[in-house]
Amino acid sequence: MNMLEHFRPEERAWVEQASDWKEAVETNFERRLTDFLDPRERDILASVIGKDETVHYAFAGGSDGAERKRALIYPFYEQPEQEDFQLILFEISYPQKFASLEHKDVLGALMGIGLKREKFGDILEGEGCFQFLAAAEVRSYIELNLPKIANVSVTPEEKPFSAMLPIEDQWVERETTVSSLRLDTFMAEAYRLSRSKTLPFIEKAKVRVNWKKVDQSSYMLRPGDYVSVRGLGRSKLMEVLGRTKKDKQRIVYGIKEQKRKK
Image 1: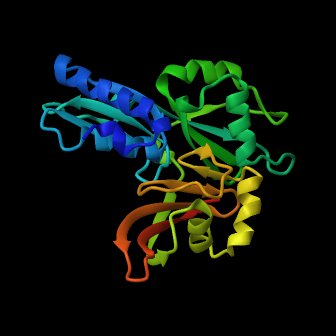
Image 2: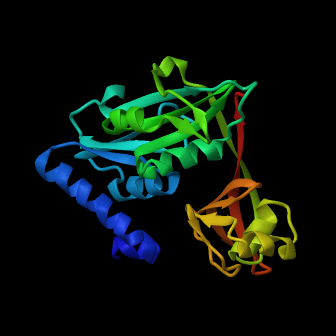
């Protein structure tokens, strides 16, 4: 069976890219370092490489709990170190008495200076400061082009990873049955909503599946899919265990609980 058949059409370009990287490392014995990947992209990369005897992979994003991480694909005889991932930790401090900044302000400012989302990782909020991970190759660009965030003058300061704010993320797994794998049906179960109350979230573009907006309540989910609902958090369809005698789908899903130090 063709590997591409296991993935959605919109994911196949990424599958082919991951396959090309694997082949390059296998053929030339040269490592490949990716940009920051979201969890779904990492799942696909891990699936493509699998438990290969020649090609290995590792992820790093500054913390085990980081959502966005870079991947290093390397020959089996190498042992990657932290510095091989070329990560920079920036901290931005601001006077809380005179200004108020939010996560969306930092994200908007970084995107506003022309930085691609793939070039920086998680944005963490602390007391009077924000931190974010960035690829080492854009260090100078950020330092030169980020003088303000939401009209607040800032100076990005590089910090050691020992000073990184903690991320405490935990997936709470649940097993249940649902009538189908439709998006609205899954949301109703995962977020404890009625089917009718899932529709405004979907119709107002507040729902993403694998980090892409989905506006159809009938969208069919697959095992491994991540669902993000603005204001309600993130969930994941982990497994489909089969059908019950009443023809319902028995599934395992997870809800992500986050506690970030403020």
